[in-house]
Length: 226
Image (cartoon, rainbow, N blue to C red):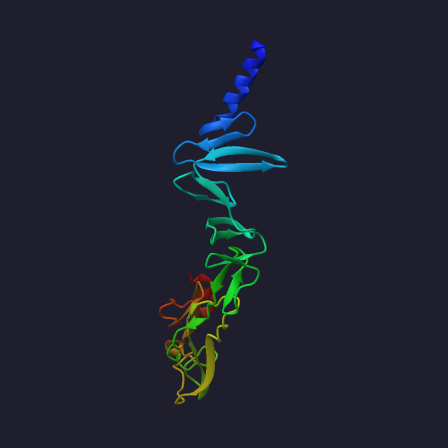
């Protein structure tokens, strides 16, 4: 009999561990120590009381003068601040203003990574640059008609449902006063390399003379640009 009493006492003490103020031999905690939340774990037909400093996923802590309890979030909510404000939705639902929705409103778009409804972002682009010098086959002399180019920068890329970006470069025919190239026929002093640099979706246009390149051609300059 004494051994049986010892076993019952042992299991009773085990059940009362974990922040319990009072407990039952068979149902675990019945009340918790101050500031802890009472959580009722259900497993088939068995219910076991437990005490936590914060509630498990799918539950939120509700304090009252009588008892602090872990209350269950709504069925479509994986984590919540209270009964009416969800902070994370279950799979297949998108979070919007504390609610879990199967589909985002028309004025928003779903983010399948964060599972949230986000604002639609449209493309933003700045003004056109000045037109480049009028050239033909890389020369600025020895011709009457050539081409000139201008570019503009993309400031913000669009989201999935946002308005797409327009073209960022355009070329038109230009007319210059025809002049002969310098002796040698290559027109090196008026020769320009037109280089468009890209940096994280931003475009910059540069016009470099071969004097600056120390005689190197444009293809080499394009390879060496950073």
